[in-house]
Image (cartoon, rainbow, N blue to C red; front, side, top):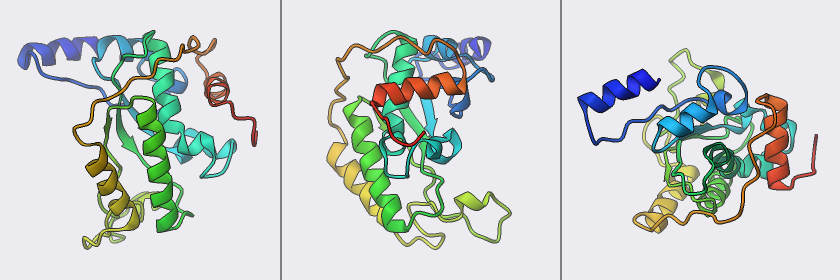
Length: 206
């Protein structure tokens, strides 16, 4: 990764280069280390999905571990960075919980983004813009999670996303000032989830 960043910086100096990775490196040893991701990137990119991170083990779709996952992962990233001033981009996020209705998806989106903004998350890219056409062989979880239908009709989540964009576009990012605990003592999924639950103060379903 460091070699690729050097190559990109030499090809396009002064530009922003990022490595967007799924949630796994932040939770356990996988491909890239969290320390490398926060040290080598001006702006770490996180992918946050309650279903794929295992959030559903710790509460319902509208409970804090789910709706505050973006906020918690941003705090985790900054814990590894050693500063609250590290910009963080939510490069991909969605529930991937297909049982939620369109209205519930929109409710989750609004709560998740507001919680993340309170934690100074700077940019948001929702996955995905449109529902996936069922004529394609794709993951069943992602056929109906778009902001719009496959034929371009705006869904409730799409309306909420537009409202959020209209409200916060151009507004300065306010980074949190609270002192963060150090990173998880062990770089394992269980230890990382315990860190997140402690940070949330969540004592619910376990």
